[in-house]
Length: 465
Image (cartoon, rainbow, N blue to C red; front, side, top):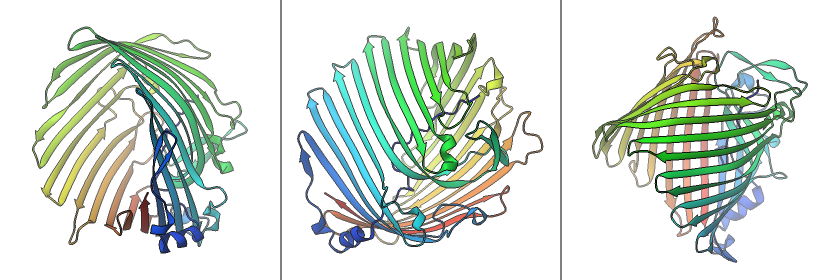
C-alpha cells in the first residue's frame, strides 16, 4: 500500500549552486559598482543579496567511485541573487515575498550546467492578525533545486515501483544529486477564546523529478487538518485532531491512490512540570479510515519526559524521552525513543557537545523497523589564531540493526561519519563580504566496500544591497 509522504523542502539546500562565467567575472572584478541600493516596489521594502562563488570539489555528486558514471572532480562557478520583500498591507496584515535564482557553470561536468534552466525559488506569504485571538496565514511557493539526498537504510537492496506497475530491486545509493521541482500552496488559521483553541488548514504539495529514472517518485498530496484543545484544568486538556490526506502518484500505474482520514480524541495530562523534569501523559482513541476501508476506534497512549539535569552558564546536560503505543502493532505505531545531550563552553572561543540518541526496538513493545543508536560529537573553535577564523570538527557513529520478521540474515549496518570545516570571513567593504571555506566529509559503512568522501573549497563574495 502506498503511504509515502512528501518532504517539505522550501529552502535552498547546500547543493544549490549557480554559475555563469561572464556574470562571475563582472561581479568579482567590479562588485561595488555592479549593484544598486535596496529597492522599494510599491508597498514592498525589498532587501537583496547577490553572491558569486568559485567551487572546487573532488566529488561533485557525493557518490562512491563505483557508482560514478562521469568525472567526480569538478570546478564550477556560481552566480546567485536573492530578494526578500516585506510590506504592511493594512494595519493587521503583513505580506512577505521571497525569490532567488542560481546559475552554475561547470568546467568538467557540462551535464550539470543549468544555464538554460537555472535553479530558483519563489514564496509569497501573508499573515493576518484579528485582535489577539485569531491568526490567518496563506502561502504559495515554487522551487527548482538539486539536492544531495540520503536514502534511508532498510536492507542491502530495496524494491521500488516502476512506471508499468511492477517492481524492481535496486541497490542502495547513499547520496545522489536529484533535480526536481517542488510547488504548492496552503492556508491555515487559529482562534483562541478563554480555554478553547481551534486551528485548521489546507495544504497542497507536488514534486516532479527531471531524470526519467526518478520520475516514479513524482507525487501530489493534499492535506486537510483541524484541531481543537479545551483546557479543562491547569494540567488537563481535552484534544481533538482530524486529518484527511489524499496522495496521487501520476507515473506509477496501478499504485494505490486515494485518501486517508485520521481522527483522534484524547486527554493530555501534565503530571509534573519543572526545569528538572516535565512529564506529560496522553490517553486517546484513534480512528483511521481509507478510501476503500473504514477503520475502528482504537486506544492509544504515550508519554513524554524531558528536562535539564544541569543548566549552568557554561555547561548544559539535558535529556528527553517519548513513548507512543497503539493497539495495532502491524503498522509500526509503537515507538520508544530517548536522547541525552551535553554541551560545554570551554572558553569564549571553544565549545563542544556530545549526544546519544536511541530508538530501541524491543523496549516497551516498540515495533520500529530497526534498533538505532547514534553517538555524535562536535567541537568548534571560533576566532582561531585570527578574527573570524572558525574550525569545526564532527564525528558520529550510527548502528542500525534490522528487526522484525523481514530482517532475516541481514547484517547490522555500522556507519562512521567524520567532518572537518575551516572557514574564514571578512568584510571587504561595508556591503561586500568574502568567505573562504574548506570542508572534508568522510562516511564509512561496513555494508559498503568503498568510502564516501569529499574535499571541497569554496570562495564566496556576497553583496548586500
